[in-house]
Image (cartoon, rainbow, N blue to C red; front, side):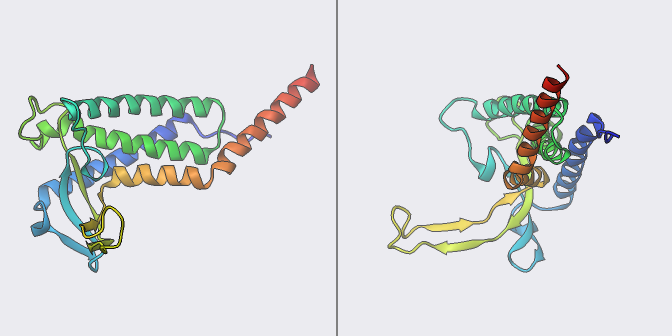
Length: 213
């Protein structure tokens, strides 16, 4: 007896769950914490903290500074990526890929939408658009809060290029970022299982079809 497949909507519900948790955490941080070091809360010693900051661009605060309206371009790109990932999840389901892969893609989709909500709406909802934005729509900043203090100090002089510079390795991220990171990480770790098993299944189907013909 063939095993019953998990309905497609379950995977989209996983994305919705990620979005919900991400937005709840962001709203809780925004309305209950002070930005920067003054409002910082230690969770595990000095290496893991809650630290409220806003990210105007991509990961680690990078921005598209070499073109006009870079923030708008980034938000539109995120919108396109959301549509593409959502459709990719649909096509993977139709091709009967494993539930593990579908869950990973759902996590990535949920994380992408979570940060997209910030970029589109937070300029209006939370009034956190940059001061020079021509309009707050599509210019909102992403709210980050999980602070991992890996290392901070001066680079040794003998290190090429960056020797003598002061550097801080302290990623600050949110639930959406974590969901995207975990989804991609699991795909990389289990790629042979996710894609190899599907290829074997397709070969078996092809062999069965040839036998029937």
